[in-house]
Length: 384
Picture 1 (cartoon, one colour):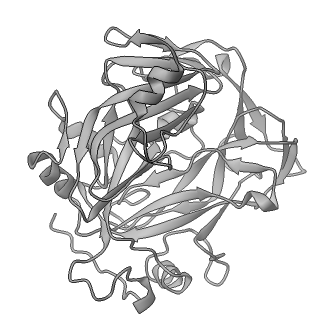
Picture 2 (picture 1 turned 90 degrees about the vertical axis):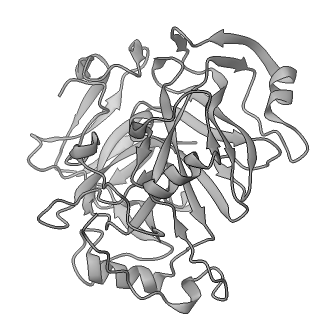
């Protein structure tokens, strides 16, 4: 890239290990490709360029899925396959495609395996389209007691736990439901540095002085509506049918979703066990030298949560004209009791991390990104 980055000045407490010679940060696409070339990331078939995102790698399902009784972690002493043999019900061939039923739990070994350097760790997250279909997906490694985390230097198999919550889905070998982000160290920003990032780059579209920064930059919910014709969200219909995950633009939205229209109350009640697609009030813009992750808001202050945390790649919400910003789509599910949410209520927070270097490509339509100028949008599977 010819564009140069202008990193913010980090406060001393933002460095995970100030005395360490190697910087902390997220690996961009070309450094992930280097790990592939060094066989630190491997697969039985070619890892394609389209799997490489600006700061993450799309992970592919392998040829077999295992239906299991319930979710589990292997524990530090066990392998995932040992638990599958103990608690598995049956296996399914994915080579020609198979339907994963709503409400069931499946474990799928992924095609990609790892042999990471000792100073590189990882984290996984559902892809945007996965979250918008309410497909509960998280990654498991051997000998661990955490989901979605890859310890430094991990060598071994990766597994996806998949549980469709609203729609049954058809998948096949090679389907990509989740993505892997790799990092060196723990480049966590303090609130002071997040404030500096906001002032310099305006990463969240809040007015100066109105930012809500505390363990991340707050994102709130839009229930007032705008030019979208009065529609402020969608509620999923139950038992609507099967969706083929690998077929975009095929399905009629009203066959699967009920539109939610704006009202004078600027509030809605989230019904227990229902799934909602809503949008943030703030536009988000991710600088070319940073990556971000949305984390669910503290459930101690409300009986709901943004159902899937999300990765935001460098370039999200940015154009050649600058940081215009794109609203975040929020996948929201209540828990325990029905819950009222109001316009402007905080539903999540953005955490930012620096990249180790600029990526070769930025998020956007040039690399096939589906949601660069999205507004309130369903997943790419539905007709616009």
